[in-house]
Length: 402
Image (cartoon, rainbow, N blue to C red; front, top):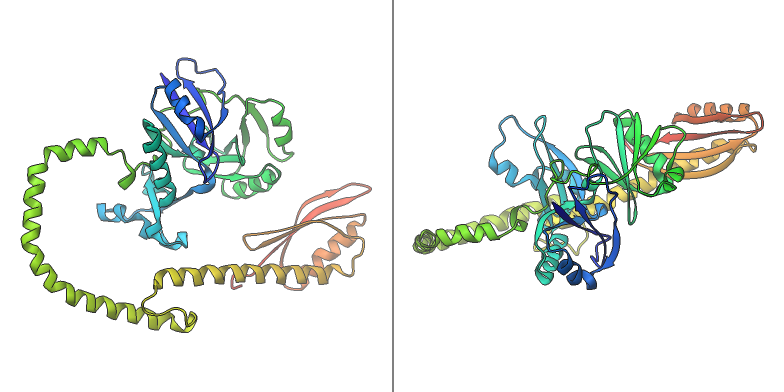
């Protein structure tokens, strides 16, 4: 059986990789070829099989929601509001697709509605027969191996998958740092690189994690997408089956419309009261946030969007303040140790990481003690002691209260 994969590069949907996978030739390496949207009609004519559309991983947010003991359909239908605190965006502009429930948790893939609408436009314009639309993470193999991390290359970097619905995208130069982050969640025993170019594996090997190279072929892929999330859900699901169902229920639908029309007059009488109640609610909401927003925000503004912007601005300013505070403390402590050279500085998730080198081990240890004496939460990691040079990484964490 043949399967046709279209793997888009970025938000523009202009460039993509494509390949045809034959399940009867499972050991043949995948032959990804580059193309552009202008050539799509020719490719579709040459490969008259349903296509799997692959959305770039940087456009998809993966999370999970712990279900109540008895989750109703209403809870699942409004899943975006259950995870609203994670999104920091207007949920009305997002599309949520659900995976299979496991251990009372349900995986959720979140993508902007405009991205899905662009996909629908491309499908309609080029007449694509689509079997599924999936995030890019799910073409990275997964075999439920305990402690294993699987890796594939993408147009914009690397895809790391460390769980059935868990993974991330990173740049090659940040691979070891990303593996360190994953290692805090799951103890990594093996890094499996699914690459058809054997020379690439040498550039990805790390000293800390055991690495193996495997070919990416039909055997590696989950061709039936049993461990993926199909983004074609809700308003973006294929409509053909629904249209057939609607044809069978036309008379019933006409009766329902007539009934609703008769009830419309009574509803109109109630709308005036509802609008007054809504205005009162909006006024109450505005009173709550009035002291935190500028004069440009009024009761007629989208208060929810304005409050989300306020939260995002506050988070950004707090992160900048944490970084500058930690950097200042480190610089002041290091000023008395001239032998210590700074190699690299990075800041992520309230952690300031400073790679250093020195010819004096005593100075490194003294600096560590000085930082701790200042009351900072400081760790000395990846310490490498050689006769001629000492290297390592100081990690300073911002306090939880900012």
